[in-house]
Length: 272
Image (spheres, one colour):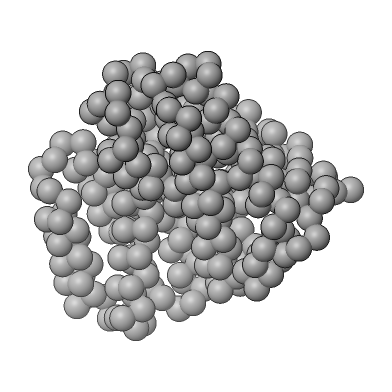
């Protein structure tokens, strides 16, 4: 049957979803903790894939540097460029004492994991801490953003399995279709209009369209990027931490990719 994995999707959503949404509402250290968990486990899974390509990414020190980068977002000991500089130096210097595999591959895998996952996951925290929002506005916005991704993914799934005929990017992800993509895009835009009507009244109609476009376009691009990495590593899922349903990187790839663009839009175009 086409919908055989639906129960698994629902089970994961009902287990992990409420935890993430609850911490998004409370914000502060609660949400930072969840973001850090998502980032750290995703980096661990990325490192496992890198090992498949004989790139010895610095797993535990990489996680430590990633968490340091995220914590610095809250306490601002260093500005962003300074933190990137320090992390890059530490990774490069550590390679002097590693003597394992290719230094170029090792450094490249470590820094890619830290900055792709760290910067993008950090953007999710920065959305929650966006200074122009009140506490309630910020919490509601993050909840709406996360739910819009899940609704978009659900719409894309049902649209794809029901009507999908034209492959979106067969080389990377053979099951994804253009039909599913457009269903997901419609679900993302429609969800922001729905949220605007009920509790995000500070958004304009243009904001709803633009935010929906970011979720509906950049989110699937993040999914495709992760699929490309998995295909290159020769694995089906980033891990089996979420038993029968892949890993954290699989579940949050769309969030990781779209969060920075959402934050950029908030910072430059949202007027309260």
